[in-house]
Length: 415
Image (tube, rainbow, N blue to C red):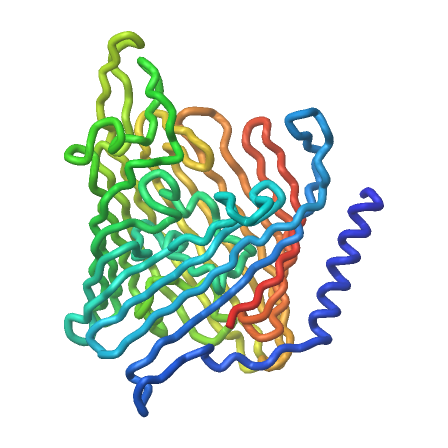
């Protein structure tokens, strides 16, 4: 192991010790402005930041043949979320911020694309009785799996499993679709269903090659009548404590604060969302390919006795069909199995607690014989629950010629 690697690990350990010594006040619900005495009319504001130091263990080079620095810094997320009710029958939510601001996306005057704030979500919702709600806008009531509805405030791993956010940039704006949703529960069965417009612009701007594989830009190439809508849903049954479904964001780890066991299933459908060329290069014939993604998952989170220790575990199987032999960036027609498990050591819940964790995912593709395998080993240090925590993680990813090894330290605070 190089001297630089040893030095970095030493700095990581020192960072944990320094942050622990500083402590953190208890979180009591954040900034909530009450408009009446009982607090039923209010505006709540939540702000959070996640800052990373990433150290690559593999040599990489830029476009000019110069070796890249192994140590890089990243403002992974900087967000503000606001929601308000002046009547129990309706709510409005606004969520904006930026992601992954680093040396490549910084701009000299802060006016570049990477420096800009944008809306992650803006929607209004109306209650239909006590247990059911309908709403619309740029929303996050997604289908497929728990991880496709994951909150970024309380993930157990440093970040979400990338392949679980299965439509980012292909049919949506950063995992949010523009459309209408209905959500609610029947006793212990919770549900969310949505019909949305597919985005015309897509990260996949490739041209469909004659006799070749599918590309995901059906709405742009076939029009909105044939390929304009997407349909999504997720249902989960709550065997033990019931989770809130007031907002769409699924919790990553309760640190033993609840006793949860849920089994869920979900889907995403985009008729003719992908396109293949069944003609020739000079006379192309574009045919739509239906995009369909299905998943089943299970989530378990429980305290272990009365000493502050806790267990969190999650597993998902996901079947992905983006069209014939589709393979682009993190997406591909095939199947995925992913899981993670974490253990909170016993200790005083008002003081710093530690949670080592392990994650593993394997993703097979129809287009190639190689599978994408991702291993994560990490530890969280919770100074004030998820509101103030440090995460140290080693992540290894293998896929074809890719063999990536990265050590990351992330500091997160949300208020």
